[in-house]
Amino acid sequence: MFSQKWIEVNPKDYLFPVTEEGDMCIFFIMPVNLPMNILGMPLFVDYYTIHDPVQGTVGWAPHTSSLKESLVSGPIPPKSQLLEVGEAASGDGDSSSLLISWAITALVVYVFLDWWGQFVRPEWENTLD
Image (tube, rainbow, N blue to C red; front, side, top):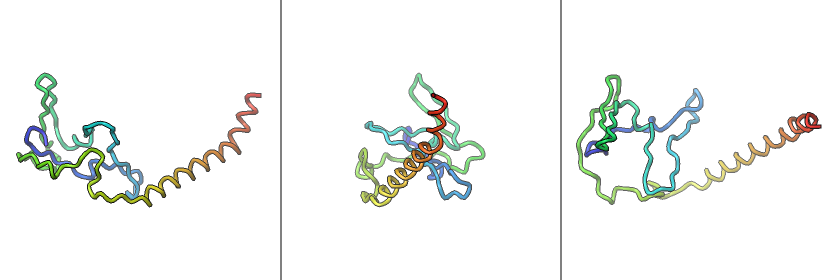
């Protein structure tokens, strides 16, 4: 919500496909240890924006080929509907996916270091001698 107007942001605006099949993607939200959110460029997808630094305002309008609706006025949601900093929407975290991602990362690092130690490092040491 900006200036009592709701801006439409679709989930696809915050995802970038890594593979052509669409089975892997990058999430365009970075963790920030601040008492605020940085919305970033995905928020601006399909909108024309006008930034007025003197007045401290931003004007929004969907462009002609946008599938997003025009801005809609509405009330500010009550605090009971807002998330606290660092709070997850569901409250339940899946620790197994975190463990699997760390295991895969460790495996990739191990394979890279093994490859470097077997092939790149000997040639590198020979060039230094």
